[in-house]
Image (cartoon, rainbow, N blue to C red; front, side, top):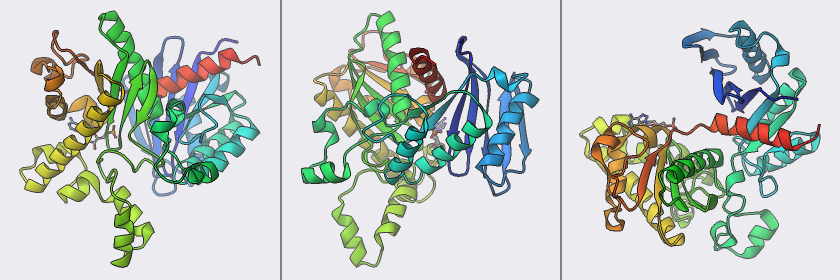
Length: 394
Ligand code: AMP
């Protein structure tokens, strides 16, 4: 059977994003999302250069998914459901067990349910999408786990300095996230660097959006990453604090904050937002003359620089830095600020190329290559869906 059209689904708590990808041509046919499910929902999609946005009646995930499937027909990107060959689902947490794309069976559904313990905000919503679409479409469905790319990190990177029993009993360890994005951009970077006859073994990929994570990619594999047991760890982000001393939690407990409140503040009211007191949107902060906005930007850059430096040491060298996601792809100023810290290693940025968001933004003679690669998690999910189905006799 030829696998051509793959529907990629990212089912979140109140939003379901979708894309239909012609995997033979690696081309997107349509993309869109249903937002605010259950609360004045709207569907937004674009195809053939056309954009559509309208209110819909979607009380729950099931109704939203039916609307999405019908929208594929209405927009005429497919004539019949039989033209959908497979579905690739983004699943946030695969635990230690699922570090490869996996065809979804009842057993896999039980596993995803089990790992909801580790990703209570994400896995249950991902699972809803899977269970409903299995009822609507009779095609193979594949789970692509966001933690998978980091699944082969060495023990010294993924263990915390807590008693080993915590890992053995409760599986407390660094899992890492944004794996599909890090995998996609590192693969693309390696292809480009090979063509340019540049070194490509030691790469740091920087996914810098509202959520941020950095990954040390050694010989194409993730060997360390900044997010940890949850996406809260690591660098300072849009609304997340990144790492801080956990003893602060007990200190704040004594001041009247519950642990839940503190974790909530650390996830939703910290980072750029908490420091600036203005906004978590980098565009707003970059325009602002406010001192706290400047401080937030400086802390943001500094925390990213520290991780890149640490990973360069961990890999015993640095061949390339890759920038991706909202800020990484679009803010030449932030890229410049970060890269300036690595002049001592021979990284030189070409301002003209950087200002144009070119793919290569370093100078020809730079010892380290800096690249801007737009992430494409959906394409990576579709590619992996096809790959796993090709390998499996059905
Ligand atoms: P993402 O999570 O990848 O969608 O990234 C979202 C973030 O990208 C937003 O919060 C913005 O702060 C940031 N962003 C998008 N465009 C720009 C830009 N031109 N300059 C600076 N930041 C940007």
